[in-house]
Image 1 (spheres, rainbow, N blue to C red):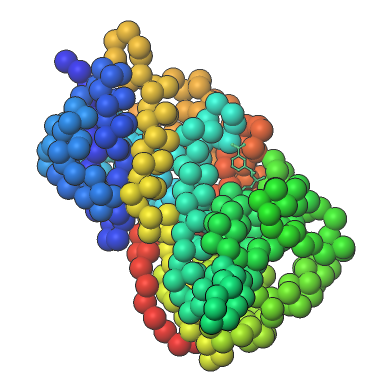
Image 2 (image 1 turned 45 degrees about the vertical axis):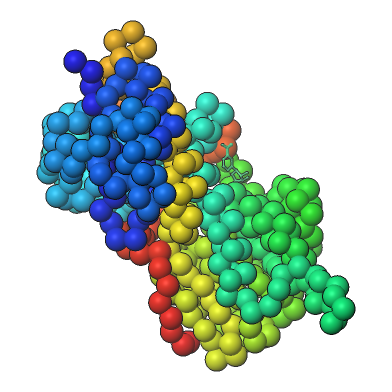
Length: 418
Ligand code: NAD
């Protein structure tokens, strides 16, 4: 009998993404597995039950989880969900494993083979499985859309009979995956875009998207391990802050995306800089789940300061563009699942020698096996928490202890005055 893959409706409030698309259902079926999708699992991502059915899935209910061999999820399963899964089930999800010892123990005790997709190594073979990139790219896009919505003026320059509307000045801080997409999106909307990063290599990428790269002379290059940023020295921070202070006062929209592996997000914008901005300016702090780049940003909130600067701190920003985020996330999961399916028998098997497996497998055979979480895995070691990911190499990706949490699904707006 064919093994079964179950795709639940995400239980976390405000999580609109789903871990399979009609396209990936079709592909999973072609591997020889059966697929059951919980009714309405795709609704918030604009996928109808009938779309999944047409692709070959059976529509079921939450209770179908109990007999599934593989569970595809967006978020780490809750205690109740874990209790429902059968022993030996494979679970692929964004597990947010740092600081989640209890949940890891619960998954180990339940005999699950739980994989954390965000720990996928950033090597060529695994690019198609890189959930951090697929979701950060969309977060960068959505950040500009959110900023444009909150900005009470037009972004592009418009020359009309009634007068000329100036283009908005958009400044992007941190030009990694999210930042580059923010730059591209702001350009498409007609903004005059500048950007900064502490990695010199980012300069060329910013320029190739039509943005102006600004970087302080005092900071030649702060590239760290594996192509990620290192933390700046105090002198470098001071020089960066002086550069930014002069620039920010002239900006209409600022998008911050700066992260350093294994550290809280660097503070880039202080209260004085926010106070220097014009009324109606907008800041989007994409690093808010990791402590924030902006003084005064609040996780899950939209704050309006005394001088009428809006600071947007939405959580789960990729989840705000759920239909597209699900499409890409589903493909990431499928690509990894495919590597575990035996082409002959159509059954799923875990090869612990595989570097993708050893980098992502958290629990197996009743134990926590990932060595970053106290497991005694003997397979190819993942990076120490501070090393971050290596775009070329073997290290696990940039995830910081305690980043994002079960609140991260509350990607919605509340308003407040700072
Ligand atoms: P990230 O999310 O860790 O950080 C976002 C950006 O913030 C980075 O560009 C970083 O340099 C920048 N930053 C850190 N401190 C800063 C500061 N004080 N001021 C301004 N900017 C600061 O990074 P990411 O987006 O995941 O990507 C980092 C690198 O990895 C990039 O070079 C990217 O191209 C590369 N990458 C490679 C692969 C792959 O090979 N498969 C996949 C994704 C990303």
